[in-house]
Amino acid sequence: SVITYWNADRSASRPDTAALTAAYTENGQFFTGLNVDKYFFGENLLLTGKVGFNDWENTFYGVGGAPPPGYTSDYEEKFTTSGYDFRGGFAWRLARDIYLGPRWTVESNDMEEFEDDGWLPGSGLPGLNGGDVSGPGLLLTIDTRDKTFYPTRGVMLEASFDRFDEDFGSDFNYDYFRTDFRIFQSIKPGHIIAGQLELDYTDGDLPFYSFPDLASRGNMRGLESGKFIDNVRFAGQAEYRFPVWRRFGGVLFASGGNVAPDTDDIFDDFHYAGGFGVRYTVETNQHINVRLDIGFDEDGEVNVYFTMREAF
Image 1 (tube, helix red, strand yellow):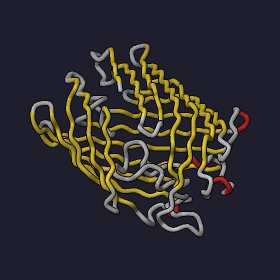
Image 2 (cartoon, one colour):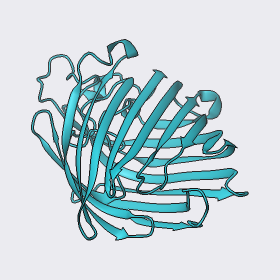
Image 3 (cartoon, rainbow, N blue to C red):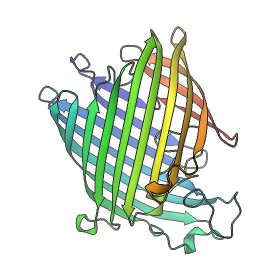
Image 4 (cartoon, one colour):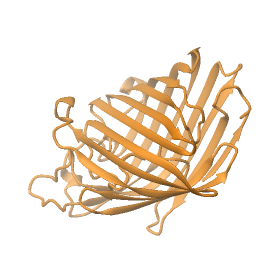
């Protein structure tokens, strides 16, 4: 990971940023991504861009947290995708800390490999042959945080709506609505309580690999990615951040959530995860950390995370 920022001396908390992340695993998996945020006209206009490439082996466990009919509860199946994704847009400042604007998303995925004796190839799920996703969207952001990389107080709300349709060059027709709310509060110097709530709602004919994933985007640390996917996702987490010694810090975190075919069932069967982590501050001006998190799911399985910046 490489992070750079500039124009950090603004009165607001948001510097211009660019972040490059790349990974190559011992299984031959690869991804890379670049994210850029650039403000213009005294922070009245925000341009955002994201581009990524991947060749990744994924694990499919079924839809809705249940294995396919006839399979045992420990069912899992590998499949490999490769492709790229791009998202770009701009937003105007409507009022202090409030931005609204359009964006466009393009994704392309090729199916490289299925397990020969797996359930997926004959399942009839959308996306078995890969395909393209393209369409417009709208993003609302309210951000009162005091810092971008390591907030100690304030809130952030992002609400987005994206429409993918064959009229826009998409192979799949569906809507995707997402909200992400975060709150930060310092209880004494260096000690911070942070919370996050997320809701993903989809409607239409989306590819199976685009289903909302309960363990995505830094939430539900400890739970393996792809284990619970469905049309609707709700997840929340809380975190206690505290200093340890010099540039070292510690974190305790816990989370809960669920996926379901619709909103009526989202609170029926919650799943839980939690754990602890260590932080080392590599850049002190904006408090950019390297983090190591060890998370546990409700069955006691362990997952380890090592990267830059906070989970949220």
